[in-house]
Amino acid sequence: MYTQLRSVVIRRCAASMAFIMLLGGTVAAAVSQSDRKEAAKYNDQGVDYYEAGMYEEAVASYECATELDPENADAFYGLGMAYLKQKDYRKAFENFEEALFIEPDYPDAHYAMGVIYPLIFKDKKDKAVEHFKKYLKLRPGASDREKVEEWIDRLPGLDFIGNEAHDPDAALQFGKYASGSVNRIVSRLAGRWKPA
Image (cartoon, rainbow, N blue to C red):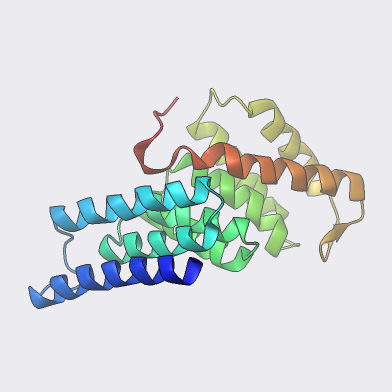
């Protein structure tokens, strides 16, 4: 079923891209209003797939959204979230980074970077702390403020070695917290949330 769904999503995306090319446009050119609307549909579809636990389908939908609208920070963020759920941390990192390039003050992308840095860059926990601090600055009333502040304090002292840590209990807690946070922030995608 996945192959069939992915096929449909890719065909629809390819048809939209072919139409753009037929009109003489390129992805690098200004994105038209109709492309933005089509990208928003794919982004919403990605959110639905993500919430249903269909992460591969979510990736396909978000990829279409980013192709149609390469300035859609939400789509890159959603793509990063889907990759994070699939434990493809490098691709998740790249997409969160792209979301922040487009929208430097994207609170949830900063939060996600705080989560992902210790997972792929064992020696750059300071970068994770920077992103968590930026998240709290951008969202001062965050409901998870205390937990994030706790991780800002504890993260530099954790000694990650491979997927384990010198302090296994703390690393396990961080892993569980990070995983739960992924689910908490996904519902904010595609305009389904109002900033605090």
